[in-house]
Image (cartoon, rainbow, N blue to C red; front, side, top):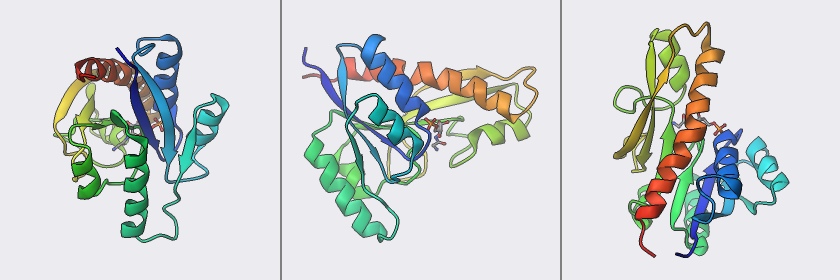
Length: 194
Ligand code: GAR
């Protein structure tokens, strides 16, 4: 089976991107896919420097100073040119417009640090902490043109019992994200016919 082409979109830290890249190098994604590019809308995203260190091709189209329409048109052209099998959002903090969502049906996925049926948008861990939850969920879902509203692919529990602060909540959540996203990706990649 030929390796699938995945494209990762980030806006910031890039810890999920790093975890996926490690699984592509020597973990559960080995021989299944290659990361064709890490894309960001921010040139100073720490994840871009990380990807460069790892020798992964990067592409930045800065959203700053562009209208939404202008930025999204450039992004769509770029995405099409890459011919990805899957587009993986990993902390990409912009809503994709309908033209992009429709151009890649069931080929764009996102990870969200909460149950998307209960909390959408930013600050999923702060939400769980403030609600005093003993368990929260990580959601991996297909992307539609709404905010974290696409069809759920899979969810994983994060045990928060005894967590002392928001830092601990996020630490536990990210530890789950870093394993779970690659597991979901693996299942999806195996289900895509070449
Ligand atoms: C992750 O916690 C991810 O679940 C979240 O942003 C963080 C990115 O971290 N995504 C969302 O909140 C999407 N609504 P990372 O840049 O270190 O991967």
